[in-house]
Length: 367
Image (cartoon, rainbow, N blue to C red):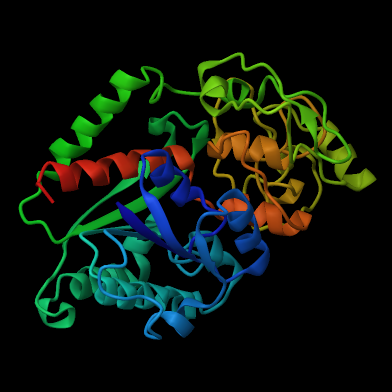
């Protein structure tokens, strides 16, 4: 089955669909550095590096280009962290990018679309934005007489065997009527659990990154032997893996980190820390899950991202492991770009489940 990935990022959502056997026909990503990571990991995909508002009605997409459209419009405008950073965030133009997503869906008319976003999308402007999303996708007049039936739920990544307390809103639209969505959701979980019994098991930070060796200056390390089921799931056959390099922290930052124990944060430092994040200078526990991996996981003031026993923040490879990226996936670009790529990505284990769920929606309804 053919897929178009909009707002593709580095390819986290694509990864799950590729693993399930779909073919990604086209991917759209605005940022050149992020698009480069996508291209190098998926050289078989046509990657369109442009703003979606420039191409949604330009003829790039045509009827029948894809059976499935996937993508998560940038979520900063919907996020509560954004509310603390930007005044007037309700009018953030990024909140309207879903309309360009809609335009592509209208043009291509896929049988199913999958949209991912922060759960805050449901409550923005008192729920008006979410209501608008539901209304336009179910409006037959706006879709040439072929509306979509929408199903949605908030997922917790910890429930998908990912060592991270991340919550996301998943919206699935299909032209198929009377889908027993809850049953298909549960059946899909049962199928995947039968194939991989540990897939949905609760995973800790140690389970995810405990076998990684010391960091290196170039980020390249000898491929470690996986010790846990989660590490085995993400493992590859390469001799070396990449992106295991640490951020350069100031002496002041290192001294602060030394004074923070597992589970503590900046509140134990007895000094003013300029950060909007309540978990700033937070240190992780080995035997618990990480907080949501954000685009600032490489910064002590960015949240609870200090390594459980070392006085540094997570490396890109550690953050990628916590996001459930396979070890052979390489991130390219400057340090800041790589952090954004990982923090903005859909966890591939979640996307793999969504790919299987989508296939079940189509196959069980003989589409």
